[in-house]
Amino acid sequence: MKYYPFTQNSAIACLTGFLLCWAAGLWAQAGMIDSTFGNNGIVLIDINSGGSDRIYTVMVQPDNKVVAVGNSKKFPGNSIPVLIRLLEDGSYDPDFGTDGVVLSDFGDVGPEFYAAALDEDQRIVATGYGNDGDFMTARFLSDGSPDPSFGTNGIVYTDFFNNEDYANAIALQADGKIVAGGTGYHPNDPEDYGFALARFNSDGSLDTTFGNQGKVITQIGPGNDEITSLVIQTDGKLLACGFTVDGPDHKPYLVRYHPDGTLDTEFGSAGIVVDSLSNIPRKFQWTSLLPDGRIVVVITALGGDQNFGVARYLADGTPDSTFNGTGKLVLDQAVDCQGLGSGLVMPDGKLVIGGSAGPTGEFLVGRINTDGSIDTTFGNNGFVKQQGTGAFSFIKSMATTPDGSLIVAGYGIQGGNTLSDFVLVKYLNDLALGALNFEKPAQEVLVYPNPIVDHAVLRYELEEGQQITIRLLDAAGRPIKTFVQDQWQAPGSYQQSISIPDTLPSGFYVIQLLSPNGQVAVKVMK
Image (tube, rainbow, N blue to C red; front, side, top):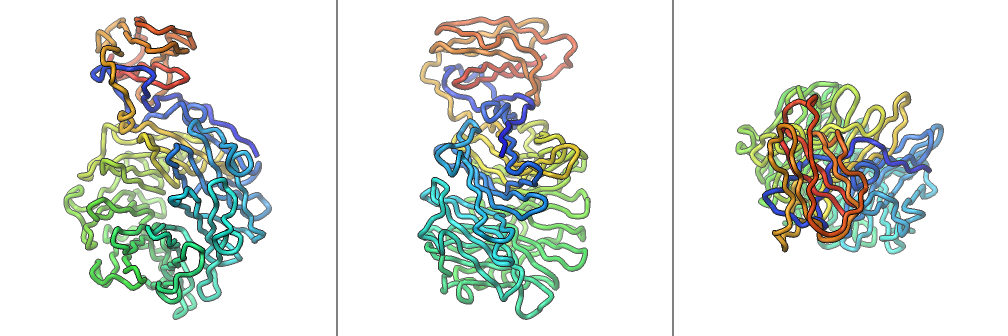
C-alpha cells in the first residue's frame, strides 16, 4: 500500500490565530485549497497497486480527524472494504487500525461498503453488499477494530427474499437504532426490485417494530427501484430519495415513511414524490433536510445529458417556489458538469454540491445560495474545478470540519489506465473566518496601496517568532511569485515590498503569509 499526497496547486487554508490581525485588512476566498492538508491540499492513496480504490463516504470527527470509507478491488480478485483515518494535516492516524488503515474482507466474497456514518461514540457504522447478495452492515470501534457488541463479530447480513440486495445509504436514529436503505428483491414481481429498508437495534438485531420483522420493501415504479440517500427527520420519519429504472428510463423519487415503516400519506401522493423536471433520464443522488423541515436534493442526469442540478421541496413534498422561482436549479451547460455525486448543507443554509466536470473529469464543487442562485463568492463564479489525479476524478462524499473547512472525497483515475485511487481534497470555506482571534486589534495585516499599480507594501506584526513564507497567488490558488521563503522572523513589526508582474492581467490576487502554525491571506487588486 502506498500513500502519496498529490503535488498540485498550492492554495489558501483556514485562517488561524498565529497572526493577530485587523479585520478590515483580512480576506479569505472560499473554495481555495487548504495547503496545510496533505500535499498542497490533496491526499492521494493507493491501497492496491494495480487495483481500483474508491471512497464512498467521508466524515470528520470533532477532533478534526478525517474518516474515509470505501473499497479496494484488485484485478483479478475481489473487493475489500477499506476504512482510513487521517489526522488533521492529512497524514495517517497511527492510533487507527494498522497505521491508519483497516482492511475488512470478513471472509466474504467481494464485500463492499457504499455508505457510512459516525455515532456519538465515534464508532463507524458502514453498510453495503456482502454474503453474495445481502445487505451487509458493520460497526467498528473508534480504533478501527470490529465492535463485538454488534451482530456477530461486528457484522450483520440482511436478506430480502433470497436474491441480490445491497444498501447505498445509512442513517442513525437518536435512540441508537440504525437504518440502512438500498434495493431489494420484491416478492410480488420476480423481475423487479423495490426501495429496501432495514432497521437494526443498537446490538445489530433487526427491529421487529419496523415494517415486516425489521424490513420494508416499497415498489415505486414499473421497474427496478433503488434508494441512494436516506435521512431521519426530527419527528422520527424516514425520508429516502432514489430512482426507478424502466428500460432506458430513470425517474427520481422521494419517499417518506412513518417511524414504523408505513408510508406517510401526507407527503406527496400517498407518501411518494416524483420529479417532473423533464423526460430526461435522471435520478436523485442525495438528499438532506433544512432546520425548518424543507428538503433539498441533488439531481444527476444519465446518458450524458447536461441536466444536473438541485431542487428544494416544502415539508409536504411540494416544490418550494422560493428556490430559484420554480423549486429547481439546473446548472448552466457552461459549467460542463459531467455528474453530481453528493451534496452538503452548510451551517448558514447554503448548499454545496460535488461531482465531476469537463472532458478530463475534474473534481467539481459548487455552492448555492439559499434562494437558489449560484453563490459567486465561492471559487470562480460559484464553482471550483480541481484535477485530483492525472485523468478522471469524481466526488462521492463531502463533509465539513469543526472550523468550517470543506473536505471532499471520491476517486481519481491515473492517466493511461482505468484504475483508480482514493482522493481527498480540503477547501477553505469562508465560515472558517470564525477561527480568527481579534483580542489584540493593534496588530495588523495591511497592503497599501490597494489596488496595486507597480509596487505596494505588505505590513504585518508577529506575536511570536515564526518561519515565514510570503507568496503571491492567483484567484485559483496557484502560486505566481515568492517574496519570502522559509525565513525565520522574530516577534515584531515587518514591511515587505510587493510587486505584481506586468505580464499578469488585471484582476484580484492573493498575498499569502504562511507559517508551520497557520496561514493568513490578503486580497489585492491589480
